[in-house]
Length: 185
Image 1: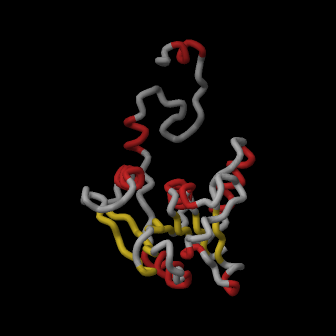
Image 2: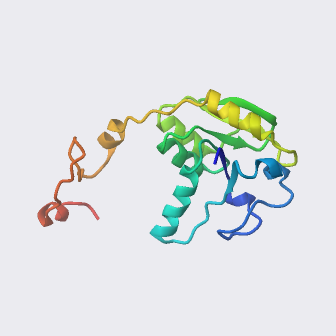
């Protein structure tokens, strides 16, 4: 797929893995000529490893991601897929949110995730839910504007409160019974 559009669970018509967006959300309408290029993605899945893997594979099958869902953005960023937050206001326009501006209207989980990765701004594509999305512009803007976030895991590993089960070279260390007995419960 050229573009995957990840729905937030609040936008689903039903809380089922096969549900699409609510009918009144015009911004998710995909014209017939683009149906083979744009995939609307529902991330609800059965609580099994196989279904979770299926959901991740659906997202990573896309060249770019536009997402209302934090999960969609995290997966896209993890796999280096260009992505943007699909803001629910605007007129098919790209902008950046200053994540350090406490008054900026952005979900606190998005703010925490991106600031935690060292990003000070969040790429967004805005479109009112009641208006048609300019899909070509969304794809072009994401591909032209997105930059990957930091992948430095040293700070995360240094802050981890328990003994690491991997070495600095990411080779698996055996966890002995004696070592396991020292872990706090």
